[in-house]
Image (cartoon, rainbow, N blue to C red; front, side, top):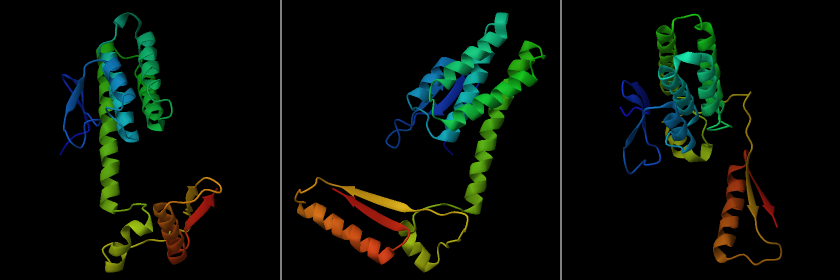
Length: 209
């Protein structure tokens, strides 16, 4: 199985997602700055993977940090990683978790503190794998009904109504006012109207001129 990200003696190894699917290439980040750049440049992407990368980046940075002012070093490392993807929820969740681990272990000798942070980062990765495996075992997914119509008809898949979940899919079509549509655009609009009639809720469309 191809691992998205791993902790190794050489550094944090991750698959370069900018090269997929044509090439399977791995990047080894040997410093926390290199981990930060991998997140920033989308070498690694996907919310859970970004969280794992941030945790491993912190652990890697602390493993190499100057022992003179370890708290200052920890803050600098966390701040650097936090700036990589300001909107990534999992990134900040992982950073906060590593901060808690650091605070809980602040009284330990430096070698044990470093080990504790490495263990925490590896645990975050293992928990993410377990969550994804659980999703796979349960076989639950939220997908548009139109994409699996045949499978539903043949019984390969079943739909499970959930009253608490309600979605409204809106397709918005925009074109210039008083303009004449091309044959392709006219055909597309007719197709959308036909699908809205045949499928009904929750398929909606709105035309704006």
